[in-house]
Amino acid sequence: MTASIVVSDREETAQRLLASSARKSYDPMVEVDWEAPIPDDKFGLTPEWSTLYGTALWDEMTEEQKIELTKHEAASVSSVGLWFEILLMQMLLRDVYGRDKHSRHVQFALTEVADECRHSVMFARAGERLNMPSYGPHPAIHKLGRIWGGFFRGANAYASVMAAEEILDMMQRDFMKDERVQPVTRTVSKIHVLEEARHIRFAREEVGRRIEGASWARLQFERLNTAVVVYFVMKSMIRKDVYANAGLDPERAAAEAKNNQHYKDTVRTSGSKLMQFLDGVGLVGGPSKRLYKRVHLL
Image (cartoon, rainbow, N blue to C red):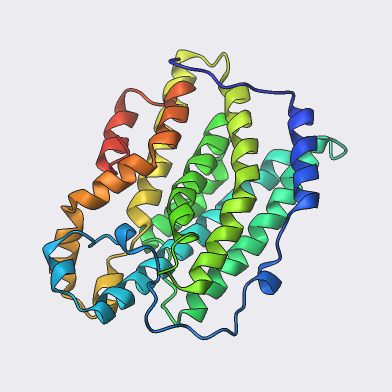
């Protein structure tokens, strides 16, 4: 391994995270003003995060078209976040099923499930409030998720979850600060970022704990499984339907998005912290590198 992380006692970490949850948690049904009007002049997400930003097509689009596209992209991102939150809740409940329910570790895992349940409703409500389609991942990936979710085990479960959450986090940290963005997107992003900080800490320590001393064969499996999850999450983030639904030529838009160097650079820069962590615990190497490069994280 090229680096290491400090792994504190499992119960000590869980106790601190439970205390943090007690001090600061959010109810999206209260914190988000779901009745507020949707401004016509606000983007759905930070425009620099649009898959078409920096392309010739983006330069040709009117301001109204750019706003409409980013609303659809925001709804697509939220729907994938919702899909993965559901997989995460399944994994956590399976993981703690046979553990001591008096332990703080299990109690924080259950607290996280409660958080993720609220987040799922929040993501669904955000897409609905923007009056967007219910996107979600491609149907084939959705079906694979149902099967694959049953095989979440050990380090790969926590690494996969942490990676997916950090991908969403890296986008939402920009969304929540950007006054050009719809208020509903900003508030949803802020709630998710603040609460996910605890979840990511929990997952990171579990990854370090469970990967320690792994055999060569197991390490190869953990690497590949984590990379496959990241690959499909990144590929699912923006459905191609968004372009047609935003009134654009879908073929041209998809082609320009695929070759958009600005978007690739944004993903690579924003994902550097995640990749440093995965590399530090030994989860980057071999075939996994090719998958990370295909989604521009390396």
